[in-house]
Amino acid sequence: MTSTRNIPIYRDPAVILIDQLKEIYIDGELDQVETSNWFAKIARKDYAVGLNLTGNSVDDPDQNFYENYICDSNRNYTKYCNRELDKLIDQQSMETDQEKRKHLVWQIDSKLQEDVVRPILYHMRQGTCWRPELKGLNLQVNSIYNGWRMEDVWLDR
Image: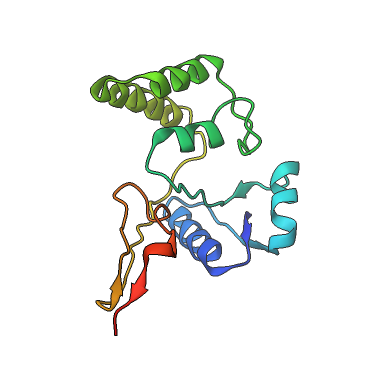
């Protein structure tokens, strides 16, 4: 049974997952959970497979690692805990040399994958669209969510 929220952005990947599992002879069913019940179900660990989305609003490893993987995070739904990995996460966060930090992030990511902690099925890409009449909008390079202060934006018609 694959449980997920009963909205398309959750349900569609769950259906794809169930279909892909059939390729390795694992039959599955979809358990569609109303949004108001979803996080309580996750907190109770009331699922065999739970498909959840994780949105990162900033393109920086800290936001993802601290929110989803450290031992004491409330959003670490699987309750995976590795204190040594927590130390590596702290270390990468404080590292000022970008190449050293990248190497630490790769180490952390490799360990999470080896331990099969919340396996990532896909990465969704999003973009921002606007019309030529829209002036003053400065799009950010590291996030689609940053820079949405509209006091400097106007329509030139």
